[in-house]
Amino acid sequence: MRKKIKKYIDEADDRVVNMIFSMLEADKEKDWWDELPEEVQEGIDRAIAELDAGKGIPHEQVMKKYKKWLSK
Figure 1 (spheres, rainbow, N blue to C red):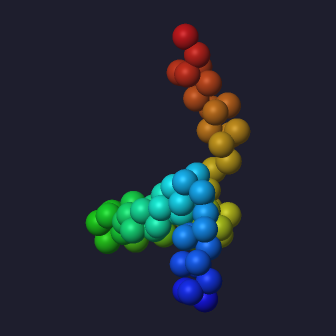
Figure 2: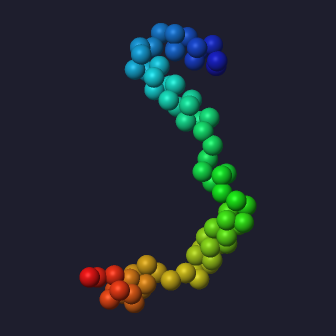
Figure 3: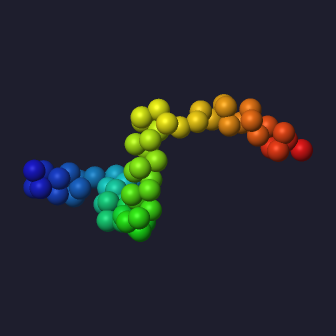
């Protein structure tokens, strides 16, 4: 597989080589999630689990309740 890819890159024009390079560079970058402290990740995971369990308040309900504070 690597030989095929190397051959393809050798035969590709500059536009394609630049696209491949950009993809490889993006793959090297760290994921922002991994940069978050563990306790923040855990809090986000708990919040998502609560929402999945139906414990959240729908956006429309919150907006209706606080509409007077949002419009000026």
